[in-house]
Image 1 (cartoon, rainbow, N blue to C red):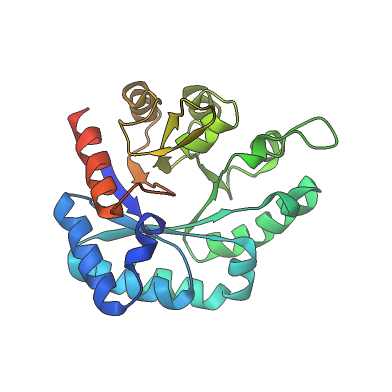
Image 2: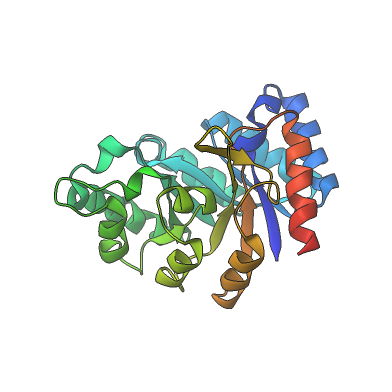
Length: 246
């Protein structure tokens, strides 16, 4: 089991090259094997460089289609320079009101990604599970129409659950098409609703999720916490320690 950290978790600790270097050393010291990049071209370049210096591999980048289309050459250049295997995208609800048009757009870029020998993954949030005007969800369109030869899935445990899916069932639906699984816990609140939590401090059953993930051949796991109660490094440490205890 290879554990990575999505650097969005520590975005408040990436404001200068010195801070980036120190933060990545701390992530390595916790025990993480890898990181996943996000943000601007400049931020990704700096984080890739200092991750390499810290002894962390970079499992992938996570951006969106607008970024991919605007910075195609810069993105491919960073991935080649630092041996980054996967390019991941997420989307916002307005992008796929016409799912077929969005799928065609994704496929067009995914073909370029494949030609460069990278893999290409779609990372979900919760809004893909809202029903569209045709009565189906965007995710149901994506599961059916994203070409397996071009597009993998990068499920997020928090957002899959938020969307009303059993995470284990979703992993069964995407078996063979997931190289990276985002691990994020969901904590129910006494006053109603839910929020983000360190792995093990929420309500998701990660013992069973990891069991199914491993049965499906998933080897790379990325911890992400959108909002942390205090120091995000401490949150990453708590999540890491819990996952290793399993």
